Structure formats: C-alpha cells, structure tokens
Image 1: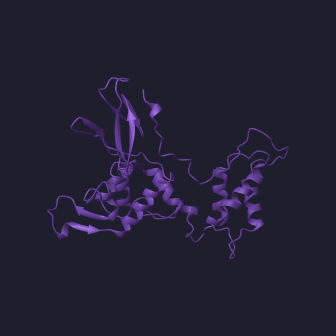
Image 2: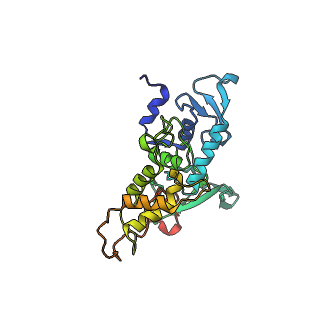
Image 3: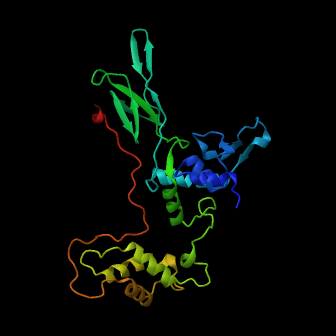
Length: 283
C-alpha cells in the first residue's frame, strides 16, 4: 500500500503540541503552518511556500478544539509534556543619574540566577562567574506550543481515555479482535476479564486476589459493557469474572503485608509538568 505524506509523521516518537493537534484533525504540518506558531489558538493556517493571497489561508475550528484540549491537559498536569518557555533578559533603564530595571508584565514571570540555570530539562549557561553578580531572566508564562513536546504514546493513551480516536493516531479507528465492542462476537465479560487480569497484578493489603478483582471490575466494568439497562453492574457477572481471573485458588490466610495498596488501573501515573524554581536554587 502506497504511503501518503502524513504517514511519514508516524515515525515520530514525540511531536510538538502544534503538530500533534494538527495531525489529529488531518492537517499535514509538512504542508501547512499556523499563522502564529507561538499562539495558534485562533486556528488559522497558511500553506507553506505560497505567496500571500486568499488561497493560501484557511481556518480549522476542529484544530481549535483539539489544541485547546491538549493545552489544558498539559497545564492541568493530565498529560505529560516537555515545556519550552520563551525568555528575555531583564532590561535596564537609565534616567540622568538614576537607573532601574523593568519588572515582569502580567503574562511574565522572572527567575534570578548567577551562573547556571536548569529549566524543564534544558540548560542555560552564562559567562558570568558564579557568586559575583546576579542576573534575572524574564519568561513568558504561556509555553511556546511550537516547541513544547509530547510523547506520541502518552498522547494516544490520553486520547483513548476520552474515546477520541482520530484516524492519524488510530488508523483502524477502533480496537481489534475481542476488544472491539462492535465485533459481532464481542463478549463484555471476556473483554473485562482480560483487562482485569492485565491490571490486577497482586492483591491489595488485607484482601484476597478475588476480592481485589471484584473491586476492580465494579470500578471499571461499565466501559466494557457490563452495566444493565439501568446503568448498574449486577453481582453475578462480577463474581463470574473474579472466579476466572483469580489465580489464588488454593485458599489460605489473606496476606497482611507486602501487597499493593492500590489497584492498577487505566489512569495515567501522576504527572508534574512544572517544577518550582526558587532563588535559593542559585549556585
């Protein structure tokens, strides 16, 4: 099968937020670019390589929705990202025998340093000898979304949790095999049982394996189709799934220590995109 231009973007393990949102709505970053790469929220694009003219511009309301969702997820630490912040030096102002330095605007923040500063994995080096003089960097609080990057795997997992399966990231646009709820032989019990076996790796403290599985199924079973017409999960299918998944069938006392306190689930690990940098971090 012949590849089109957008297929080659699937080689990327990470994408800028701008490109990630563009690909989700079938806009090829190799052919088009935001009118304002550092502030793409208006959803306006131009075709690369074209002279200025009405045919070289277009708007995408779908992009605005996807970009906004990704942006808010990153800012709320729901989606991991490597942030890129635009910076500028603090400017000095001179008036006769008096001098002063400017203060950050409302959209800016500042960090004082004296030699070496590390921000979000990036390093800024200066030729100032440490401990002799302090310098200040002023930065835009809003990340540069054309340089801020997300992992494709993290992005796809985040999209799956929201039931959003754009064709670029999910070419088949649906789960495969027994996980596909549209398959004529789909079994909610089978899909949920396999998911429980994959996620529950050990019993919770003071609980048996079976009881741990029961708790997991009651929490996650609805999305696999276990709920009845009233939206409730009945006890019988829960018990049947727990019996199938339970690997601790020989009985015995329930262990009281060394077991997992939390059940593994589809929820992502805790994310912290922002590290607080304080003046006492200076060298």
